[in-house]
Image (cartoon, rainbow, N blue to C red; front, side, top):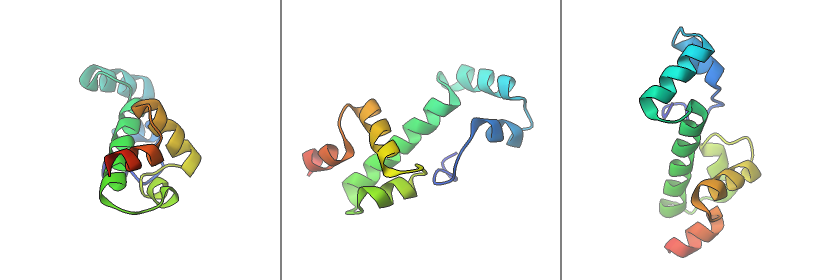
Length: 95
């Protein structure tokens, strides 16, 4: 998942890649990681966005592209849902 973070990751495709049915894959993933595969991917992406915000001067559009979001607004929405702060506010606060 981390290697292909910037790609469009679909749980159905990950299950197929592992030669498992979607329901079995989803069930086992939740048992092992304690959350859904989709939520896991979002957490990894948000953590990567944090790293870009802290250690680069890339704009939000480039960060969203580099972390696999379809568009910048989707990244901002998910970041705010997870961190309770927008990416822009997060960057300003950490500087």
